[in-house]
Image 1 (cartoon, helix red, strand yellow):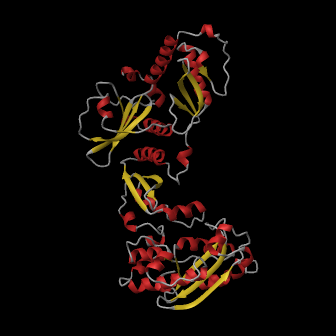
Image 2: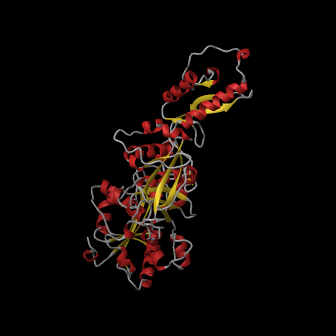
Image 3: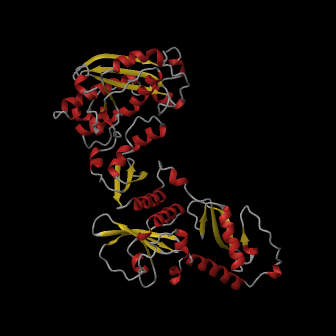
Length: 486
């Protein structure tokens, strides 16, 4: 339906009350519809609706609607056809329009009516016509503009106030801004109500990381993208009625970003930033952590112990493992080949048969500790050290990822034409980041996929791309003798 095909460009100004915050698990308890031609009210209708479920006390406290009030009200099915006829071929207007729209569309669909409409959000409309206000809630706008509002948080009262607000904004809209807002492909049809479209327009069509911020500026979501602008827009498309998405969109007030040059740099920065900010709406990478670690600690008598245990957030360890078995194999290797006393090794839930050692048989403490420290040091030195060089954010730079002794050291951007004397010089050019298992897995996969981008390191120089060979693998990289130059 185009605007020209609508009923003389009539508007259905809608407000609803519900049992909760999302259409899938909550139900409508009251509906009010005001039909408007842009100048005056043509028709008005409202009704309570029996939601078929209990109304929570928190909702009663907000709206005053309780179970007794709706017990004799019609079910939504009984008024669905009337609602459909009033909304059909009209522009759907509401304050924070996506909330009301998602409920109405979902319950109409349940009742057998396929309906969609062009939407106009009076929150966004008010932001365009009256920019710079401290708040764009319906109550605050009505106070600021001296709009009478009765029966606040009831569908009829809020719909009437929204109709007055809409007419007021339309009078001030001398440039007919709303006509652009109601075009089918207009961004205003998709955007969260509190997001300034100018922030979206400034996003680049490049690889990088983007951040969604709440009203206070706190990061609530971090994402990566091959094309930042395209990816951000994808968050706002569709009619997802899940509670998490509805709350998510309402909390987005600002967007920021950082270009990264490559998808790998974007992935690594996304992971690092999620660990840094721990955003409210990021889920997957928070869970992606190995379960086991090899730890070292000193007991009250000064003896160093090696122990396998479950990891916790932010806990440092010698090495992380997805499987307890792999950690056990490494610790057993230390015992067998490095002569580590098994009395000072703990294997978590697994058991290792060892002969009990009496206290009088305890080894020399200094000798034992030196052996443990050397064992750990030698093992770490066997882990690969290299840099992964790729394209940068512009033609004057290259992206650079530094791995030191099998641990993600940092990343950044170096001068395309710069001269670097060795490993320490390169390390000084990148930003330090805390390593984690997921970041190392990303680098391992990239190293195996693009061996020509790997450069081995010594204390004095960067060696040529000797990794570029047909049977290259990360395991072979880790065992390459070149890394023993440190």
